[in-house]
Amino acid sequence: MPQPDPFRILVSAVLSTRTQDPVTAAASARLFSRAADPRTLSHLNPTRIQKLIYPVGFYRTKARLLPRLARMLVERWDEEVPRTMAELLELPGVGRKVASIVLSHGYGLPAIAVDTHVQRISNRLDLVRTRRPTDTEVGLMAILPRHAWKDMNHLLVALGQTICRPRQPLCSACPLSRLCPRRGVPREKSK
Image (cartoon, rainbow, N blue to C red):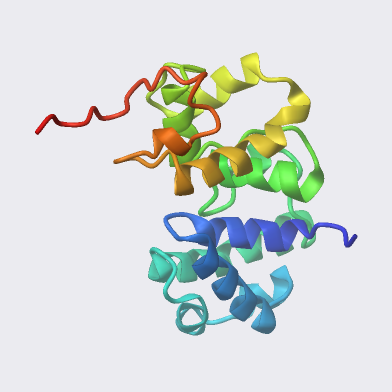
């Protein structure tokens, strides 16, 4: 099995925010066909990047920040993606979710990436009672074994996209329905 490429994981994770997975995958493939490394990406024109990554969410903003991110990798880390949360958070466009994805999937380090699905489902399952993703991350880290952290995002995102949706969740189809207190699930209106 090929080794994960932290650079590709980082760039794809940045592109993925507010974007559906198939759109992210296609945009990432187009971008990497023109810029497969930080040095090349650092020299790519933002207008060209816009065309390559459209229609990802906030594509104009991401097209401006990606060359800056790549330049930082070249200038500060000799084209290597940092291996710590603190250093990753220094990069433009990188928040805790993206940094956690890089740490867990790029380097195999324990981290929990909290997005809207993880936030919503963790609260519905009563694993945490939080409003902010950072608090959810801390809460989940306190109750879950470290070996489960990496898979938590994938599992809950898949559940959130298909069954435990924000509105009209399909509780009857949920594999966790017997364990779920359904905290925060909108009640069905009586007719």
